[in-house]
Amino acid sequence: MRMQRVRLNQKPFQFQTIQELPQGRDLAAGIVEAGGTRGYLPGHLTRQSNSIHRGIPMAATDIASSASSWKQPAPRRRAELLRFPHALWRQRELWWKLSRREVQGRYRGSMLGWGWSLITPLLMLAVYNFVFAQVFRARWGDLQESGPLVFAINLFAGLIVFNVFAETANQSPTLILNNANLVTKVIFPLEVLPAVSVAAALFHALTSLVVLMGFLLVNGLLAGSGLGLPATLLWLPLVWLPVLRGCLALGWLLAALGVFLRDLNQVIGVAVNLLMFLSAVFYPLSALPERWQPLLQLNPMVLVIEQTRRVAVAGEMPTLAYLGWGSVLGLVVCELGFRAFQKARRGFADVL
Image 1 (cartoon, rainbow, N blue to C red):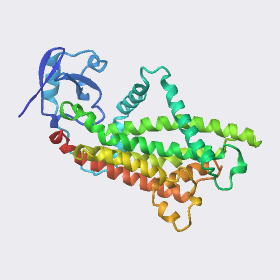
Image 2 (image 1 turned 180 degrees about the horizontal axis):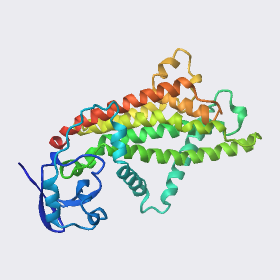
Image 3 (image 1 turned 45 degrees about the vertical axis):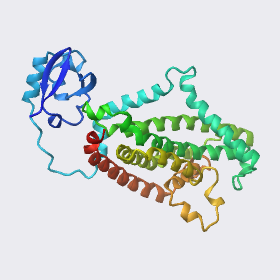
Image 4 (image 1 turned 135 degrees about the horizontal axis):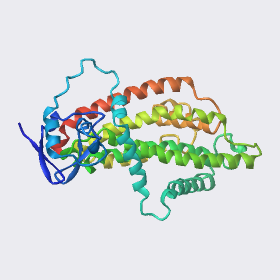
């Protein structure tokens, strides 16, 4: 049996093969130094001693005896219909810490820090509004009497949703490639990495949503309609739930394919730019000729963007068909993406 040599406080000890180490919720419970990189110590070892659970080193002989006494758990007999919720729930603490580090690391060292997450969408909104509303004299249907900022508000609402998709799609193909040491040197739940990318994108979307709410308030005051925040904004989490699940499924799929297809990152970049103009971001779906509307509705982002504008800007309830079918299809594609990723990860180490 091939043994892996691990060091803890410069004291060598032996583990069983990586395949025999436990998988699951205790994976991130302890951390050891493996070959000069940080790796995960199985949680059943941390339960042997409160000291190591708190991050205090444990004697190498004690750990070795605990590792030798551990036995491979019996395989599950009952097949799970949905595996991805259980997998993410087991790693929820690691997911939260990595997501927080991703958001903090993006603005670490900058003078404005978290303020860039507010400035960036404002600058984008100002440029797009100037080009389309002032230069091209574009109008948002028959809603111009609703206030002077109605075009900017509808445009920004579409950008918020599309940016969640764009950020996830652009980062996913290189997630595994940029973290190759997590594949080849340590035991790590790789399925968390795309979930971290989606969580970071959701944070920026929520930040932009605060800006959108501010524009709604100002537009309501300028139009003389009083409070510009519709009560239907409370439906927004349910409206966004299908697109978040879809982005998570896309993240798993692109992260797996990106290991084997190195040109995928360039292809995705071009595709995202094209989809921005085909997702009804800069225009309402009703502005298209009727013969083209069914074709454009095949794009899932069009449905999500239209429903977001419906509840956040127009003050209308979301359609029940969207909520029902969106939730079901979101679960299906998310489960398929997760299973495809888990199957493809077996070959990551050979390629990397």
